[in-house]
Image (cartoon, rainbow, N blue to C red; front, side):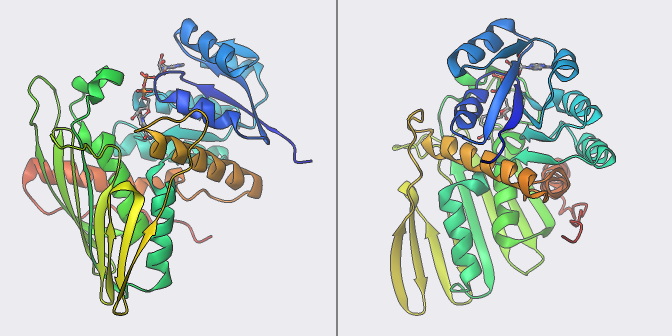
Length: 348
Ligand SMILES: NC(=O)c1ccc[n+]([C@@H]2O[C@H](COP(=O)([O-])OP(=O)(O)OC[C@H]3O[C@@H](n4cnc5c(N)ncnc54)[C@H](O)[C@@H]3O)[C@@H](O)[C@H]2O)c1
């Protein structure tokens, strides 16, 4: 029988509940401890998920537990110190997005992981949705020909501030929160980008950052992609949390429609493909698509650890996503087209 990997979860807040539910589905993983600065949150998680030990100090956790990995779904400000503690104890890490408050901090975290020779993955879940696995398969099949254009659109009016009240105060808001997912998806589907233009808007009053943005990417393969996203869109039905869009190539077009419906026009024929997400006992609409992808992301991390390979969204890989994010903010502030820093992956 496969040995069970022993893990801990640091941060038992809003989104961590999905991580905890996800880990509970794995036969080959045991979460042996949870940690939160807030004792009540850590204890509640331990009770609900039957987890043996509870900590309010990450230092104490690492000094006491023997761990195969740690999952850190805190907000990004704590990622560098918490990941640093894990690396000092030789423990592989999966960090929630966004990676860190700025690109320099991301680079420091990657350097620390590499110096410690431990795996670091960013929990970037959109590319692990069933829908985007299928989209990628279609792109890879060559049916669309050479890619020329793509649009990924994520627009909603849900009250995101109810579950995540800290978002009212963040100065770099929607590109960090949602844009980073779409930037990663754009890399996943169209490949690396070498130019970034961005325009941001603050539509809701009383918040500190931008709540709508459009990013235009020029990709190395010649394709152009547009990412548009908004938390200030009044629409019925509200598409949250779906990413809609289209991909054009020299031989066809793929429409990414609502409800996980793909419409593929290629070779003179049109067909529709339904791509459902997996409903789980603990998932609930409208979150199912995201919750389901959490489990696929976790599975990828565990499989990468077991096989000793670099995860697709490793820390090093995610530097390229983050460079696009930094370039988008720089473009929005300056009005200029920005050529992002490049971070090629080591050959496998
Ligand atoms: N991937 C997605 O689809 C998705 C969706 C929602 C949120 N998120 C991300 O999840 C992250 C967490 O968001 P949230 O809304 O759950 O935040 P939250 O504030 O509800 O939870 C964070 C928890 O971490 C704890 N914490 C902070 N520092 C700690 C430390 N040093 N040691 C132990 N515990 C500590 C806090 O006490 C809190 O309980 C954010 O970065 C957010 O962007 C991702």
